[in-house]
Every structure is written in C-alpha cells, then in structure tokens.
Length: 428
Image: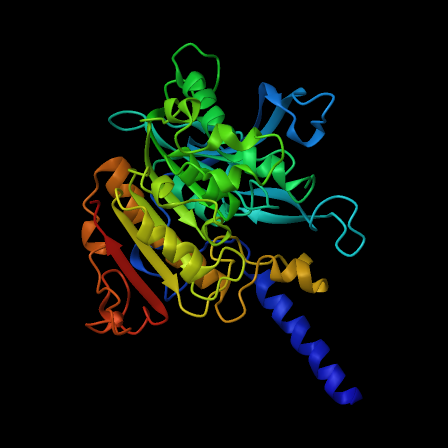
C-alpha cells in the first residue's frame, strides 16, 4: 500500500510539473486548429475601475427599506493592441484567488499567480483603417475577470479591445447572494459598454480615446455571464423567473417590460455564450428566447450538470429562433468549457481543481478550439472577414451521426476534430 501511495504522490507531482511547464495559458498546441494561432499584433493590458452609481442594493433590501441604493465599483481588465516601448515585453503576472467566496473554511480565498502574454500599461497601437471592435467578457458565478485570459489575450492580438468585468458580489473573492448576479449581469454589461464608449471619444483623457469602436461590440459570457449576455440582447426572463427574488426587483430584466425593451442596444452585434445558465431552471419561456436577434455562438459540453445540456444549452440554441446561431458541443464535456486550465495552486484542493478542470478533456485543448471558433465567429460578425468556411462544417444528423468524417473540418488537421459536434440554424 505504501508503494501505491508513493506512486500516486509521484503521479500528482509529475502532472503538476507538466501544468506548471505550460508557462502561458492559451499557447498553440501542435494539434491546435488553424485560427487558434496568436494574431500579428502586440498586446497590452491595463486594469481600470468604473463605478455604476445609484444602483439597487438588492442584497440589503428589506420590507422597511425596499429600495436601498449603492455604487457598484467594477474592476475591469482591458487587453488591447499595443505599441511596446524599448525594453518592454509581452509578459505580465496576473493575481487571482481560489475558493468559492469569502469565509468558506473548506475553500478559503487563496491568492495565486499565473503568467500572461501582455505588456502591462503599454501604449495602445492605432488601428489600421479605423478603431478596433470591442469585446466585453463576463465570468461565471463565482469567477473573475482573469479566468479566460487565454482567450482575451488571443483576441487582442487579432485586433480587438477586450474588456473583462469583475462583477461585484459575484467573484471568487466577494461572492454574495445569487440575487445580485440575477439582477446585475445585464446591467453591468450595458454600463460597461456605455463607459467604454465614453472613454473612446476623442478628448476623453482615457487611453482608449480614438482606439475602440464601441458601436461594433460583442458580448462573451460564461455560465451566469452567458445568462447576462443573452438577457442583454433580448432574452427577457419569464414571469416565473422574476419570482425567484421577492419584491419583483427582477422585473427590470423581464420580457415585455417597457424599461427592459427600451434598453436593447444595437451596438451589440454578436454573442458568444459558453455554457449559459438559465434554461434548465425555466428562466426563459419561448416568447423570451424569441426576442434574441443577435447572431450567437453557443459552446457547451454535452454532460454539463450545472447549466444542463438537453434541457439547457441545446434548448437555448433551438429556442432563439430569430437569431443566426451555432452550437459547438464537447462530447463528454461538463460545465468548464470556458476557463483557463487549473493553476498548479489549485491541485491541493479537489473542489478548486474541478472549478477549472474537465474530467475527460484537456483544458488547453479546449482553449485552443475555443480560440479557433471565436476567432472565426467574431471575425465574420465584427470585421466581415472571410471566415465563413470555418463555420460551414458537417452537422450532427438526426440519427446522431456526422457526415462526412468530422476529421475533415476546415482548419483542423486530419483526425483532430473527434469528440466535437457542430450544429447551425439560420434565423427564421
């Protein structure tokens, strides 16, 4: 038994060493699909704070004080095409935390660091032929603005300004009541869009002045971030979902509500929804989903036991009938279709490890595949790039087969598209 234990310890140590050797998340594996490759532009990164003032403090509402107000201070990580000074390098160190919120003795908030391929506070580079499209990234519950750095850096290298949000009361550091996440995801997304649009104006004094085109925006959301992104583009929640929080506060996100309908934003041209939460919990009815008209790429594992698959993500894909949409499915994948691989710091706690890892898929492989498809989809929707052949792929048939051989997918080397399913439905 002692020999077996020693072997297990050695195996874990070797595996941890291998993960640690992957110095930068998102690097191109030998089997990565074509469009996963990093783009030609250098990347800078900065952290900013924006405060959404006079918002409903839903977590402290009472019968005596049903409408308390507060300012929501949102930390934003901004990646952008950069012009590096002499001696500057595309390297930074990100600091995030493990855990599932403050004051959890089983999973205490533990800081950890990992490397990034971006130059901290580098000067922005002027866009060729205009400004760069904007991509807003929204994490899961709980999560952080840094949990998809493999994708945010990659997109910035291809000519996008990428702004990832730390949603207050919804990160691993400050997780609080779920009602705040249900209420605020859409509102945070739209506030950040308005804020960046103001920063982009000439003379704003912000480093993004004249750099970003906020009229040409995509939302990327993971889990509750996917819920918020869909809610932001017309998927108004149902009356039964409003009842999830006493007092009717969620009606501001309800389908048919005049205030909600007036806040649809034509600047949002595309949505990428990783494992979006809500459908399996009856957050939307058919009328609510029919409100989405924004082209959408759904990405999910078919064994997702958090957002659900057949009663969850697949239901959303089929129900957003007025949107051009695609669905990429990881066969055997669970809920972690979006984040970075687990840091070596997470290996000492099973729950922290499983918050990032997939049981049967290599996370770095998933990251490369995501980079490929998001590059193609956003390139089409925001830049009119000729990437449509990368999305015109063999679809899953009604009998469960895919013809021709999925190994022939464009952009994938032969035999490397196995384990993936692809669906596409046009807008009705």
